[in-house]
Amino acid sequence: MRIKIKKNSIYYFLMAVLFFEPVIFLVMPRLSVIHGLIQILLLMWSLFIILYTIIKRKHVKYSAIILLLCFFMWLIISNLFHLKTGRDFLKEMIPVIAIIVIIIDATQKNELIVLLKEFSIYGSIVVLSNLVSQLLCGENGIYHDWLQSWQAYYVCGNANSFIFHYLLVLGVLFAYIQLSGSFVIWSYIVHVIMIFSMFYALQYGGSTTGFVVMIALLLLRIISIRVVREFIFKYYKIALIGGFIFATWIVIGNGWKSEWLLDILQRYLNENSSFLARGIIWNNAMQLITEAPFLGHGTSAVRIVKDIDGILRSAHNNYLEITIMGGVPALIFYLLYIIKSLKGNRKQSYLLIVVVIMYLIVYMVEQNPFYIGFYVMTTLCNVMKNNIGEDNVKS
Image (spheres, rainbow, N blue to C red):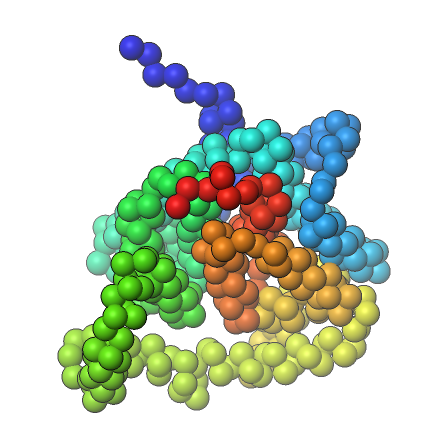
């Protein structure tokens, strides 16, 4: 008996590999050539997809996508006044547009569920690979010399970038579950693995915000289960008393869990914490914005904000970073795109909306204006609310 593999399944899996290349290729010198080839292939394929779509005259029905294009166009206008690095911006913008076109095209062909399945499979493979590489390359691992400075580079990138990739994988899994009803148990397993990986990365300077966000997302998922909700509503008094006892236990500092929870609070609240140090950076970023509020400083305006020690850094806030690059109009287009993407979503896609909101929360302390994963999530919000009715979604 032969196992039939559909061509469209292979195509979408290859798209996942191409557009979400593991950062391991950036780190290991022997793989840098592969990374360069993938980047060239990604750019060429992205241009082909965009041109093919234009030639075929496929109409984009989603007004949110038009707002996103306005955002990109304004950044292009800004770069006309900062010609030195406009090319780098286009290199990041073109793949974003291409992956959006792929998602819209898959929706129009009624193949969105196939795309989501292949992206989910690939994302799960990356998450598992990330855990293995952490165990091998951590402080007690076999290849601990691989570490560079305070960063622990693994398959998904350095310790601070886990949250960006993990939210993408979870978002795609949520969307696939909503359409097919499959991968439910597997998605919880993957989620727990992500939390373990992010907790493990904290010892290397990993993102505390990302770790807290990932736990909050898991709690929201558990609460969303009907049986759990009914139990909470039925025994809410017991839950409140239990929560009070647990909180008291943590505050007093008894038990093995209290140490790392209090350590997380200390990392946020002590005077030398990176969170409070960002306040200095944000204040300096606002001064830069006042210097060029309309056109910004161009998309190359990274690491031009001074921190408390006078060292040039990025804004550590996605919204400030965008405003520095393209001015206030760029931020307005960006926010309108987000609002339009989230507005009007049906109840069944609430987990996808939660993932986008989690991205927005993380973006308050981190920046990544051209991260493809965020635009994948917002595009899925758009296509699912416009093209998928109640009959197509399994509970």
